[in-house]
Length: 148
Image 1 (tube, rainbow, N blue to C red):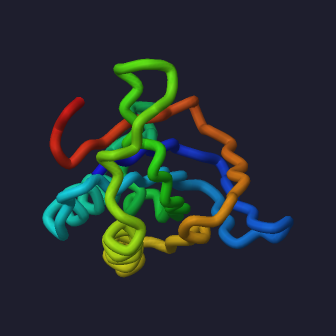
Image 2 (cartoon, rainbow, N blue to C red):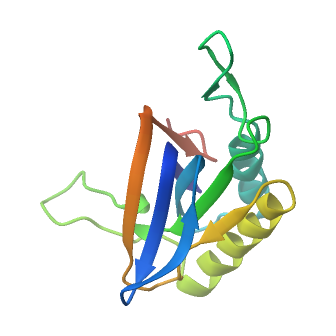
């Protein structure tokens, strides 16, 4: 499972000209589910998201988590995070999980995090427009297989 995490001042996701998810201060999370991912991968990424200390404390050091700052999370499924661009010019997505498996783990991650912070989502498999006001900018990547 992969996640691109952006610390944001605000973020929203729109489908068919309607805002379906919107947050203020917190994380914009793009989430990709890989073939073979399990609930263990989901828990690893969710715990990282909830405890990642990339918000500044009173000394301007990145030392606070999203829970510490009472932030919000917008989680959007994005299978293209599993793109393999090493060969040729067209990305291969064969490592992305099938939609039913991906949606199951995506929703489990959302529910896991919702128990601790407010979470909004996009619409699985929809054509979405995502508005991101990156704060910092701060962007980190997580991978449950620790590929980076």
